[in-house]
Length: 512
Image 1 (cartoon, rainbow, N blue to C red):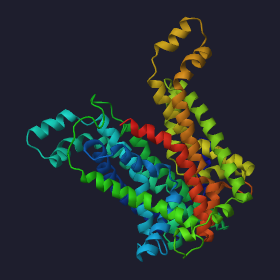
Image 2: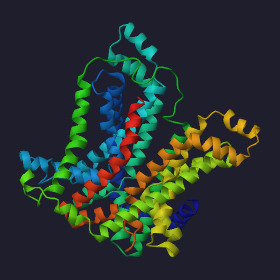
Image 3: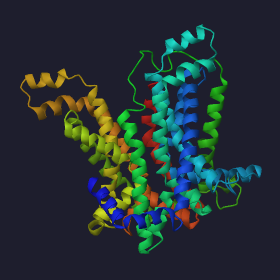
Image 4: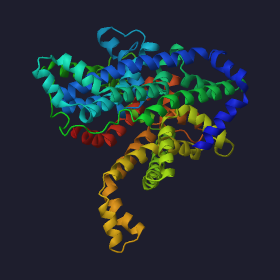
């Protein structure tokens, strides 16, 4: 990870400060920078506010079916960004489901509004998780009850008691959402590029994929370096301050403590949001995949499976196999690295590597891809191996944090007792520690596998003629303007991801 980033910044510095400044403010690059910053700010404000409202609804209200509502709110986490953008285009865009049924199309789906809307839907679950965790670990139900007993309304309790206690969680959520948004590629590529609404990530992609001039490559390198600096400037201080990771302050379980309101309307609003933001777009995507042709009414009489058959040609099957193999290799390598870092977590080198792992996960995928091309391109360009190295560099924090969190909760006496009984270090780890960590190891492996299976940002910049992944195939089909086959492939990928990830989501929501 360090070597590719060093190559990236060395290449950017070699251009000189004058050329670097020209790359950022000239040659049309200023517009993507401005678009990225203002969309990041808007999405952060809306997603954090929405995530807070959603957390208060599921954790502090009497809304019926709260466990299922949690599941619905978290569903966008397992839907790839480009699939969410495709589904929104099919639901609310011209000739979409809403247009076919009611004769209405939401203006601006292809453009800034659509990009911001889809990015908010993707980011809101992240903010929701951060705030819900803050309610479980930092909020004080006794203080809330005391305030209500003193005559304060539910709104006054929220503003004067709950919200101040949630400030670290809110700050952590804002940092996470902003970084995720400025690094986003799928939604801006699907909904922004056709409307000539570029962001930094899509400009880097365009410069590398569609331009061959040295100036375009220099601009891509400079923009990548600038995006890394911006991301680390936000994530570094947030991680160092531990924002959003407060200590547990109360023994009252989430959802079992103070209930701020007995009203049921927040749950109705929450379900309406899930239906409009996720369920209806996914339904529109499925109908497009089933309908015989574009412009034909999506009724059962016009349904066919021909698009799925057409989608599963030899190249697509090969791309799917490649994606599955890359995801499995990356997950296995990341879990092994996570275990190694966990073993070293109490040493100085382990703490340094832990910080490096978090920062590597925050590095934008586009910038990391450019860095990989500079560092390993002479040997691995256009190969599956280069994509695999990028996946491991990007996702190793997922393995480390999951395994380390589980290891911190293990009783220290168990491996010590094994050692006192005559077992050596490796035997103690193999017979005592590893069996206890199997659930965490499995969860980490599955999380990385899911991320790798639908990864698009790095793959779209690193693939060659024989190393296309399924996500790249779907993006290429979308750019060629084949909505039916594109929708069929997107539905199959999403169904696979949902089937694999649903057990994790059920366990996660069942803990609250």
